[in-house]
Structures are given as structure tokens and as C-alpha cells.
Image (cartoon, rainbow, N blue to C red; front, side, top):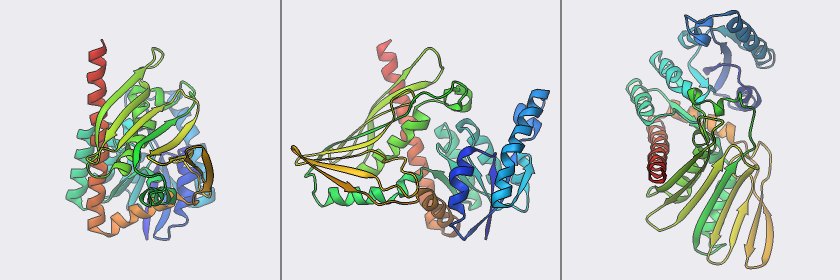
Length: 347
């Protein structure tokens, strides 16, 4: 039985991770860690406000224990070093992933990390190096890739339902959130690319296969924030299939796939974010004739946890996950480079 703890009582940990974890018998929930004063604010900056923030974290953590068992660990480091823990789930803001995942690995524990794995390709490679040296599993939680609707769509396209695919379009965006949200904070790893854009790149890679490459990228900023709020990109493969992507965090909500083929078009509206039990709807158009089909429901979070366990148990699965994580981080790095080049050309 793998004893897993959670760093910080985040909303996604309580709402999605723990209910799914219950279904995976190989794991048991050992507890949740709240930050120590020094971890929260730095050793030189502990104030009454810091203590109040930690007390609020304690209040948020209590329902984890009341409903799912385990205990509250006083400090991230305390939990990471504990003999009661074999693996750690890290749903922290992106900029904190490298620091705390590194400590998890250095202490000989496996790491299940919310996307993005890190905010920097060099950091990703450093963590993968440590994990490989120690024989530890790491996993980046892009859970949508495990949802059965992707297989159903792939099969329809392979069977020629829409003819030869000319172009895929992926759109993922959501309305602006409160300005205090970490997504608008550069120090915490905010920005549309690391949030919504990573999903689009991940799915584009799935659609295009091993020869996928990024050929164009743009990021857009607003004066109010020091992070990108909207972006677009194009990826292609050797078969000359194109994926066009648009993403943002100041948009009308969209989570769409359009597959445009020589004889038909397929569209669906919850391709990246289908919750447990939802049967997404798909529309297939042949010229001006429309048909609606229902895609399968699934629990993608549970499947992501199961994939993490496979990596713990099997060396080949573990090594494949290293490759997959580095590939995603490389695409994000390519996006940054291409976007920066385009920005310099404009100005």
C-alpha cells in the first residue's frame, strides 16, 4: 500500500484528487501538510498576518481529515521527511513545483505533480535526472489525456468518418478571475500559457504524434498584469496535418475541438475538462447535414492516479513518463522562444 500525502489543502485536492484516490486500492491517504511560518513567508518575514494565513490553512485542512482520514502535518518539510509517507501530491502554484518536488525526490519519495510539472525546461530536466538516479516515479497531471472520449474521437477519425483531416482547432479559455488568483501573479508562475496553453499543446501532441513540432506562437499581454493573458500557436507533423490553438484566461468559456476533414467536420465542447460521469456531446457535420453523438463518460483523474501507480511499479512505465514530461516541457519552452521572437519582430 502506497501512503500518499498532500502538500497544501487546495481546492482541487479536496474536490477531485481525494474522491478519485478512494477508488485506487493501491494508495492510502496519509494526510495533508500546511506550511510552517518560515515556509509560508520566509524566515525573515513571519508576521501576525502570516500566522493568520496559516491558521486559515489549518481550517481548510480539517475537512480533509474529517472525511478522508490521515492527519495534518505541521510544515511541508515535516511531511516530506516523514516515515509515514511514500509519495506526495503537489497541487501548489506552478512556480513552487520545482522547489518542493525536488525536496520530495531528495527525500526518496515519489511525486504526483499538478500541471505544469515546472515553469522551466532546465528545472524539469533537473527533476527528471534526480528521479531517474533514485528510481522514483514522477507524474504530471494532465488527466484529460486518459479520458475515453479521446479514444472514441481517434477511432472515428481513423475509420474515415470525416475523410482526410485537413486541420484541427483547439480552443480553451475561461472568464477572468479575481486579480488575486495565482494565474495573474508572475512570481507564482501565472500566465495563460502555463495554465490553459499547456492543455492545448498536450492535446495537439496527442493528435499529431511523434513528429509533432511547433512552428508558430504568440502571446498577448495586458497592462494590468505582468503575465500573458491570451495566446495562439500552430503545430504540424510530417504528414502535413495542422493543429491551430487559441487559449486564454480573459475569454468567454470555451473548451472545444474541431476536426475539419475532407468530407466532414467533428466538433465537441468539453474535450479537456469533462468532469466525472459527464457524457460529452459531439456533432458530426457532412456538408449541411448534422448528427449528434454522445461520447463516453469517464473518471480521468482516477486514471491519472492509476498511471502514477504504474510508474511506481514498473521501470519501463516510469522511464516512459520521464520522456513524456520532458517532451511537454520542451514544447512549452519552444512556445516561449517563438513567441519572444515574434514579439521582438513586432516591436
